Length: 307
Ligand code: MN9
Image 1: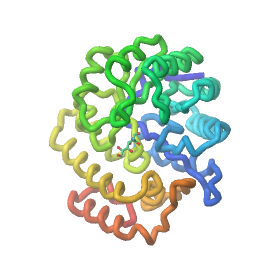
Image 2: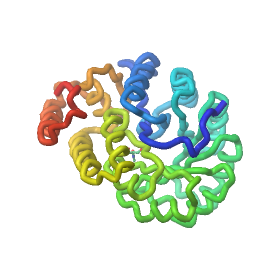
Image 3: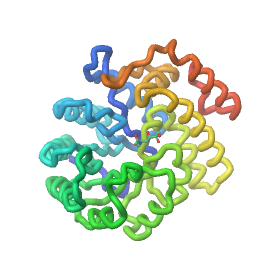
Image 4: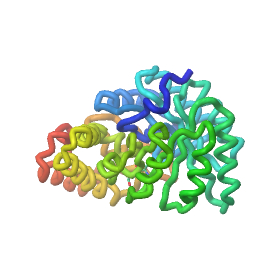
């Protein structure tokens, strides 16, 4: 049973990586360790089996297994949003129903992709999925993908069970506008980690993204700075986070995140093909760059990384 109302789902929410073992099988023990680490560092909830979680490389059963493993382990301590997106509505409905049954607090989905679906097709995709369950739906709009415009988002947002939007973009005027017109109880999550500070300043209720797997604590600092109207501190932390992110993004994503998490003293598993796994020795340059960022900012937040 869902435990949290959508309006309680806020703060820093990792779009959870999926942790595989060396043979590309799901690694449940590793997943539990990673959840513990993130909760210790302040994660306010989890967004499962999204693109950071390599969902489109997984079978339906595997996606459901991750959902069950995470929900059982988190055990109501934090809210859980499950990404159920797929190109087939029927498959997404199946995933949505399982998520609800497993105890998820909300579902989410990217719009159907690959083929050029009409606006009506996309509207009906969200309608059919959101009406198949009683937990709320968070629409996921990656602005750069150019699939949904403002009118379509507002049309989808008028559906009864659609209660939030994950908005991934590098500018926030549109996001702020949507928050304004959709109202305070319609939750908006900023999805671009490089823009976390800006997102919160522009009215986002929370942050959902991939780097919160690795440095959730840095973003808790950003969130606290915004709450305290400490612009200087918020900007400094975001600048540091940006340099950290840009350094990592010179390598294949999300593969590299598994290695970077290991440098925090964790055993962060593997990704699966076609994503590649890096040998640590291939990442000496990245270690040097991240160490230099730590030095430049005198960053206590990065103190426990072994670079
Ligand atoms: O979930 C992620 N966006 C995409 C949101 O994967 C498209 C972000 O967290 C990015 O990975 C991050 C790095 O660019 O901002």
